[in-house]
Length: 263
Image 1 (spheres, rainbow, N blue to C red):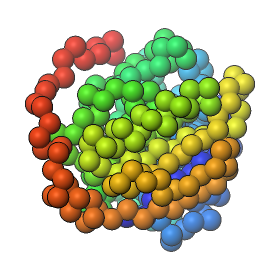
Image 2 (cartoon, rainbow, N blue to C red; image 1 turned 90 degrees about the vertical axis):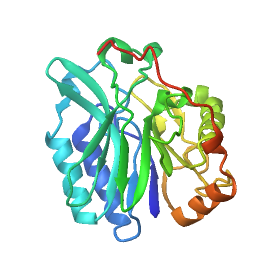
Image 3 (cartoon, rainbow, N blue to C red; image 1 turned 120 degrees about the vertical axis):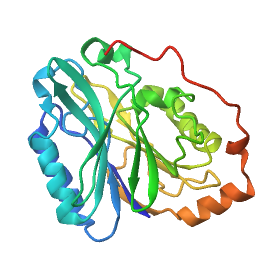
Image 4 (tube, rainbow, N blue to C red; image 1 turned 90 degrees about the horizontal axis):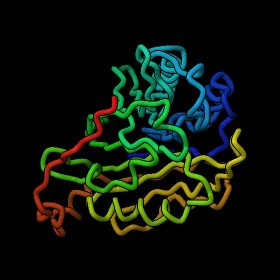
């Protein structure tokens, strides 16, 4: 499966501009990738205290994403701000060509950044499937919680995809946590982060990455690079790797308790 990682600046609190920017970037790679991954809150930036920017699921941004997926025959993965009644969600999504979109609501909200004050957490560990490949989506802060992302017999996935607005000041944690999650779950690991400076003057240097089965970065982004990289992941190779080294099957059994209920 060919996956495009889109690392670029996000226009602060400007959904129309960001949707247009994404369309331009997808048009440039039409026919070259099966899937494209964009940063967290791709249409607004990490605007945690702007409920006015929230749209209903199925609103204008969702319609634009479905149109792009259909037009470019490419699944799209990222997150955006969604309103459900009086509730706000940081909603991870997959829009697939000519198909019903699916979503995952971010479970671990970043309280230090104000997210937990305005948003409500999701409760479901959703798996996406596209062209025979199973995908687990995590949104930024979720990456710090290995049990939430743990591979098991009921949540078996091939690719872990993390979309983020992860600032430069804490990028060292991003650099070690993503390969750790990929290694312990015997899966490909993809992380897509933004670059530039946001409306709060936070700096982002990117470090978007794609890890193969041997934890080699096959995307190769430079610091602050505004670019699109396309990686080719062999699911057959991954499954052979799991047969030869089946450690994930030997992991301890567990169950999640004390799940967040402040929804």
